[in-house]
Amino acid sequence: MSNQADLARIFTVAKLYYEENLTQAEVAERVGVSRPLVSKMLSEARDCGIVHIEVRNVVSGNQELLQALEKRFGLTGGLVVPRAKTAAVQRHNLYEQAGHYLVGECSNQKNLGIGWGDAINELMWTLSRQTVPSVNGTIFPLIGEANVSNKGYHTNEIVTMLANYTGRRARLLYAPAFPDSDEERKLYVGSSSFDDLNELWDKIDAAMVSVYDYPSVPDENTIKRFGSALHDRKAVGNLLSYFYDVHGNIIEGLNDCAIHIPLNKLRNSKKVICFVEKATPQAVYGALKTGVLTHMIITEQIAEQVLAI
View 1 (cartoon, one colour):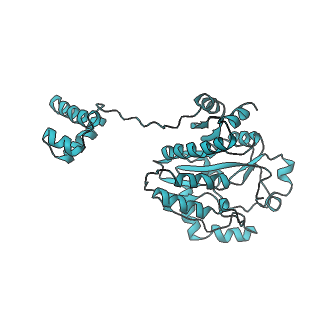
View 2: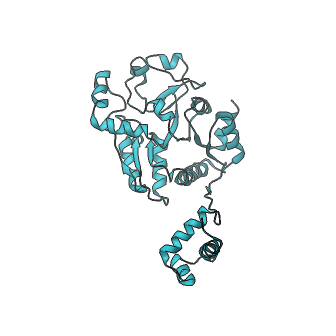
View 3: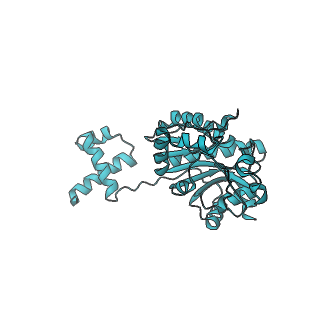
């Protein structure tokens, strides 16, 4: 441990740098040491408690509603965006504040998984207009691609776009979300490229997903995958094409060959951040009851409706 003379000099260096806003080179000249030594002393100032740095997310939202959601559903964080005068302003605020929140929440997450849908696609475009720090890590899909024209369901494009903005590497999933048969599914999941992605699913640090209603638009091959099970068991929504009822029970189909991250691996993620724009309160409530989610970005109106159920 440094002696009292060393601590006094470290204190002086920290004061010049943090309070008087001198550069490290200017501090070095003022104190009469090298710039690398100034950098080392600033690090020591943090280690020994002379300097305490606290990172706070500037996007706070409605903390009272967020705490109510955390307490009831076991969330560990999130953002409740306050009401606005018009629906257009509300939507703009939701995406902008969500973008800023995600920059802070995911800046230190190395392996980031991305879901699909219109909301996720637009949220990624919002991030492209904001200042996003470059991060050494990997971004990858959590589900295959759907054979529809809607860009929100082209997961590889979304992943590539976000990787370009954040400086991460893109790892793509060359597989359909809904193969025609179990035999076709086995061809994809038996490939070396799928094995690589499956290993990333084991190491996932954060996942970005969204909730959608049932029936879903576009339809996610639900009749072929589930028959009448979704109707019979009263499905209310889906998360990465996992359908569930209002109590959060996952509904399984006899012919479900979907290619998406297994739920047990998603549950092991340090953060599963869910973005909500248009989903019904029942769909959001059911998603929260699955126990998969750790964070939620939502509007005041929907949050109040969910808490009223």
